[in-house]
Image (cartoon, rainbow, N blue to C red; front, side):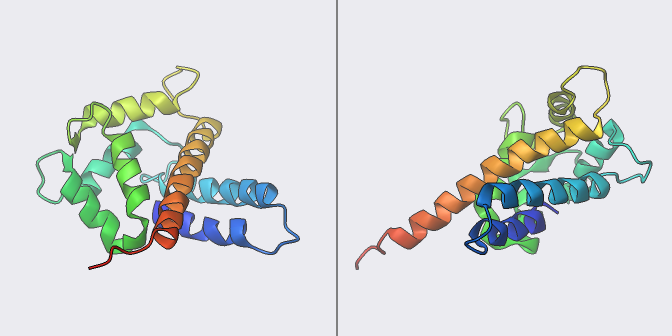
Length: 158
């Protein structure tokens, strides 16, 4: 899900010279967060609730122990888009709130609370989109820097 959003962001930033990259970025992030809002509504009720957040564990927990390890996350992330490893690492760190090396229900509760900016117990569409706009922007910058470093850093000689 994120992988495709981020892959689609690169052309908007590197697009036509006549396009203001900031305007293009904002437009594209708006579109992608709209898609994420729909995709993350796992129960199709038109809302983003705690049960939608908990679905993450069910989808990524391959051994069924109620936790998502880094290996489980990397497996699912890498299957769909291995070139975005920096983004995947950043997402895992963001979701693993207590930095224990596994994502649990309590980590996802903390994630939900971070999204709920007005502390009303609900994540509105505006809050969801604002959260993911910031997160996607930071992760995209990190991934772009990683790619630039790979291009500009000479390979070690043997």
